Length: 154
Image (cartoon, rainbow, N blue to C red; front, side):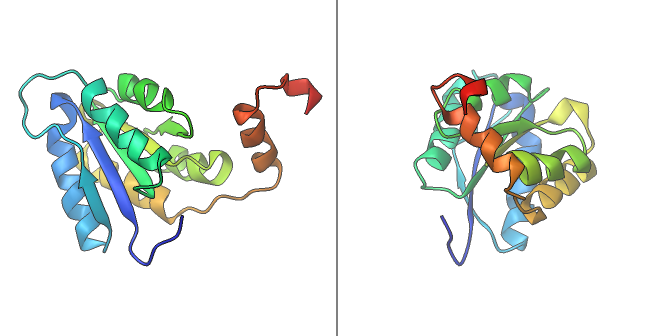
């Protein structure tokens, strides 16, 4: 999906709320739109209630990309990857973010607020959004993930 202004779905639990708000502001300054699926405070909540709808918005084409957050990002990545059509990568550096897009065409990334500084989180978001999918041998591998056939027969 290509739009003049790209839309990023955001979903988090209480442990990622602070960074979600900062990332949302960062994205707006960069001329992205956001669709915020919550949560909207630091009150304890269950992350699947916010992460899965954000991921579904990406899978359904309502949003171009998604960013999900939590304390570690692990549960959020798992929840997002339960949605068919989502390729969510847990990123902890600009290099992992760049490769997530270039090699895996990740349409969602997961970040752990308790694992990194806000400055690094924003750098990761920027690196991921700026990267381009390389296609080629990587496209074949993505198709293998989406296929119900045995991998070695592709």
